[in-house]
Length: 321
Image (cartoon, rainbow, N blue to C red; front, side, top):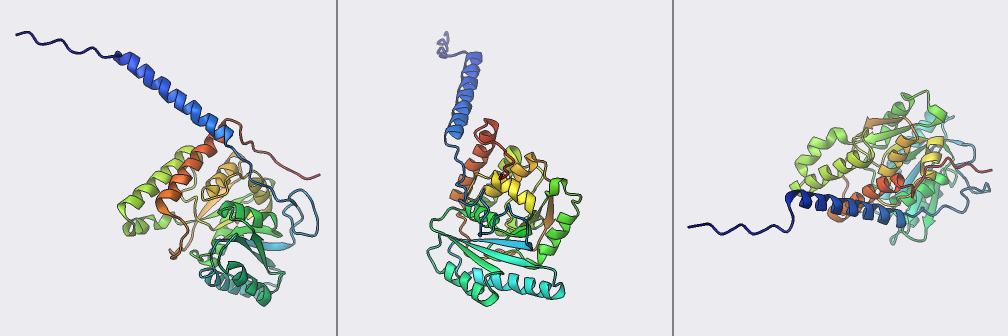
């Protein structure tokens, strides 16, 4: 008995492969077009290119260190961080009177008493040492840090999270990492605190799903943007004033993935970067929602690469006349 003939495929295998390749190319072009059209420039501060009474990063430094603390609904966690930081800074200043500092708390449109809590430290330590900048609307961590950086007066600028997850005394470790990069090309260098050495312990405490998301995010960071830094997301980063000016002047991402764009910009500008292990403790109350925040960050990583690749975003060394 003869077997019935095989049904004819609508496309031969080579034709099907060609169709899939064409579809992939179309989707890639479409994604590039969406990235280009939706590219936005982060709103610049009105004083960015104007010198005046307000501190400006383009002015000469008048402090040794500026600490920028982005804060969104942090009335409960901020006091612990501020107490630890200011205790360290005050003791260091007593040991070395030439050491001067300022702490800039950027209240990122908080709906709780974050601003009130921060202003209590202004009263206690004086507005020359502790300043509070309040944003009317929530702009995201990247937007808040950028606002603080542009208002800083320090030769070195430290980003520090309001939760106090990193021991503030570890600033000495990141300072050593920064100094080890000397001589700094054009006075630019960055030292990043890192939790990469704690990865095995953190995996043991996480669910398989969160571990999978973490590895997926790390792979995207490595594949699309930053290959030399294992932990891009630690909120403890120390920059020279010139490095802060050049990187934050070109920054576009306002939310969680801004750290990756910051380091991506630094690598493209050939700014030397050190990665230094720091102590870190997970503090309850994180604003990061694992699945949705990482999904947003994954999208931002793709668009960071595509927007620079297509010329929607360009690196510029901006100087005021």
